[in-house]
Length: 151
Image: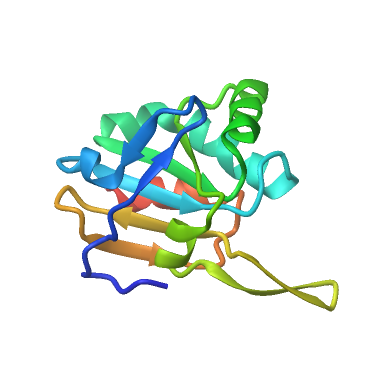
């Protein structure tokens, strides 16, 4: 995980509509940057829908939500439409940003070891500095936790 107090690595990734987003485009706003394993899986759906439900409160606090996974733009589009997600989903099929943010790790699932995205959320301040970092977050609790961090 990246250290608190360090500058968040900038990146450019396509969203669910194929439009490009740079982290530096969001300077002046707080950014909740969350990394999740896969679209349309139970934990990831729970987390995304909860972020969606809390979106008005995040907006009130001047925060932007960016979800990142290695799924394709098309997969993100289906995920967004299926659940009416009101925030940006970024596609990192090359895993460049996933690796830059140190969330590509060895995972154990039912005794089987494989590489994958460890559910991680970063809170980045208006100047692009990481002010909070949470690894192995619980999908259902993470959105509420992040909202509280913005208090």
